[in-house]
Image (cartoon, rainbow, N blue to C red; front, side, top):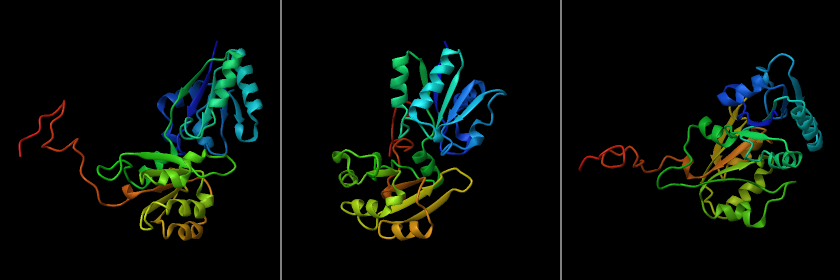
Length: 253
């Protein structure tokens, strides 16, 4: 029996889907893609005769019905999600239902928008003596957030942060972050990372709210926060000529 492939299509640039993910798209008999977030170009490599569905206008039940029917008919299904499906991808609920039907599936990871955003601004989340922790989160909206994971609570760590699905509430985001981060903390807003119309806004917690409004950014953007965006950090031990490890003997000072 064929199976369903949950594919992370990457952040937007059609070339950022993995080789494996693209191969499955090319081979698939049925493709269900998140058309509101995944560019059509990502699946333009599909074979002739493939059935194409845009899940943006479908309910969970409709998506499942298409997948189950296709697999039962011995058709290969590519379920194409934006970024990586493990982060705000809502694919767990689909997999659990497929389990109930006895339908086999596989997950092919992709490049998340928070990683694409760091690449767009040419920064590293985990700088020595600055931050060795990355927090991926969102502010509460129509989807609730557990109280223990409130933005204010997470901000107390002053780690590197990637805040999803929240730029339309930038005022609330800033208010929560200022409870623990200094107002001079750098912030980067990256809208539609890797798309042709990508937009980047840089500022601090003191200035970013106004800058976001001036740039008319209200959706599909990452909010990156933390001193990893600054210039001060220690160099890594990995390439320190005085540091020894399994593959290299350091020289004596």
